[in-house]
Image (cartoon, rainbow, N blue to C red):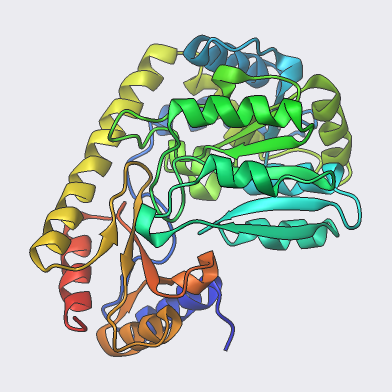
Amino acid sequence: MKKSLNYFFSRAKELKEKGEKVIGLTLTSPEFPPPPLRKRILKFYKKSFSYLPSGGDFKLRENLAKFYSKKWNAPLKKENTFVGSGGKEILFILLQLILKKGDEAIIISPYWPSYPQMIKFAQGKVKILKTSEKDSFYLDVEKLKKEISPSTKVLVVNTPCNPTGRVLKNEDVKFLSELSLKKNFILISDEVYEIYDYEKKYVSFLRYFHKNIFCVFSASKTFSLCGWRIGWGFGKETLISKMIDYQSNLTTSPSSLSQLVIRDFFEKPQEIGKYFEKTKKEAQKRRELAIKFLRKKRIKFVFPEGGIAIFMRIPLNFKNAFSFAQTLLEKEKVSVAPGEIFGQRFYIRLNLAVSTDALEEGLKRILKYY
């Protein structure tokens, strides 16, 4: 039986279609309201039938560059900006272009499960740096430095991290940024959970932006628009140009309607800021609910400084997270993500960005195994 997120998501859907009352906590798909859409959709509907340029609508790219330049004091222009069909397409294209057969790409465990697969598609060599459970899976940057070799072409970091919720400190962001120049590798920073920063620790690598930094963001998490398939990223101009050529032969361009509506969002940066704060507050309520529940029941978990998930340890009587998640889904009708998918077999990940009723009920059902 394949240990994949898609397996648990699909199985939960099958059970729901049979009339079972399933609580779905597998995918980190936020259920928060997006910014107002109806008027914008009607406004751009007739303009959305045609292709837009590969790499993204020009005005959207300008708006994104302007917004993030101001936010992080970064020297970004349209030419540094790429728009893709979700953050996933951006990462895929990046790795295809950067890696040659046998090139080393370092990822940090626990990791988002698509990283190693994308590296393998690019014929790169996956090198996994494990973090310690004793340190709540925080990245030891000095240990990482020792792992960098002449064959290292890429380092992928994720802050706030999926699945742990850990957030890199400013000094470590700066250290890694400088290291990527000294050791001459591309540092890809996956920052799709940028707005979910509860402890005010998150610092984008854009603050230290240079030719070896590439940062990725996503409307899926930022605006709760997973189905609209839009992401954006920032990197050096020559790399962006190559990515545009690649995308023109892959998907031509992302959804036109999605781009035009999101372009309109970024025409009003003050409204964007207010939306970010409002959404973060809603996410924080669910985080506090889960933390309070797990602490009261003395269930071990990683304190989520950011993101929309919580990484919790499975009971000692289960050999691995997959068996726990499988049993939980079939018997209690709660779908979670087993830790093996993220490189950690004794934990499960729960999506917190669901309704409070669903979250409370899911936690109560999970408790039956503790």
